Image (cartoon, rainbow over all chains, first blue to last red; front, side, top):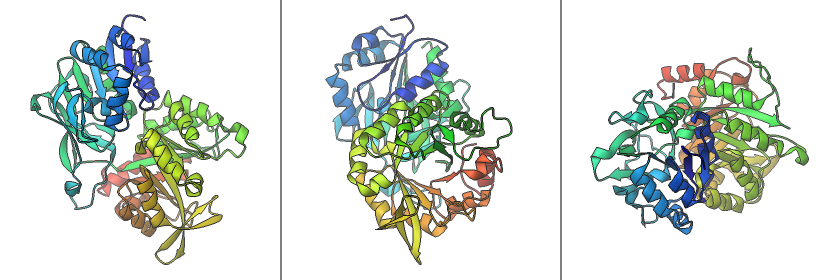
Length: 214
Length: 253
């Protein structure tokens, strides 16, 4: 395995082709490896931790493949990007299936509260939150470089993270309620939306991640 | 500000080629679905849908190559429908790079397929396409085979049922309006959109930009799908979005 590899952690939940394709598109010829091998994750220069499906299934499959220690180590020591469920799994606990997460960030993963899901005109908002919404940058960050504040990204989710420590909030979005759509701390950046499906804004974020020196 | 309403250009593809072609002035190959998808991405399309209408089964796998090529170049969501009959079909399309797979006749014939596919790949990947025709005032029934077969299912009941089975989205086409350029069936769109909690994409009948905006404001659609008004260069996706924004609709621009 070449130095400078970007590892995309594959724990068997869903299709990682889109994430891989988008990373390859901005990686400037560097190796992007979709891998279920803890050794490849451990040897990578930077790690992308995606996710789709239900969080209890994701946690189970992560452990079934023995990937938890490698993911936790990566989150401690190298540039680390969580995407969608991969963001949610970094938290302590999820209301989805009442399951424990990895506890890298303190806080809960909550479901959009049905009773508060109405827009400004009183129309009911649908859950999942699916489509293009604005991400307000809560603070400057290397991964926001060149991306306008309030740029729209593509979301598909019914749950969102609620960090206990607000200092880690890097981005917020409104959908019925304001929610945290990106978190960051030290070498970790994690985002609820799908940068790999978010056209120019998403590709810019992935390219920023590949260049990031936290 | 909040979630944008989506504009989705749709391409009919057969044996790897766009059926009606397009007349973008400067396309190298007007029949290449990947090049057209890329053009729509540049115009600001929020998603692209490929409908595979390949009749011959030995040419079915061509769509997989198209999807692979598209996913390598176009970084917006891609929905693929047409000829999807089994969970294996769903998986093949997702593995090739589709983000969502749309099923229509197969869902009617075997509703368990919706549940099974949704349980396997997640409901965010499963779109159920409903082709509906008005059969009485305020009543629509589900048709298959391009509007030839009446299933006898009430469209609103069927929409609720597929939501319960695990559909993540509904692509609703009015067979009365499809191809007419007279606008969406707004009463149908609204009846279905108000009956379910999952997003509804309005389809069938778009002839101008007002129709698109009406689909959202009158029809309560979460997204609007159109083919010919974009393919033949009458309007760009960007023009459509600018018009919708003037009408007070949130769009990604």
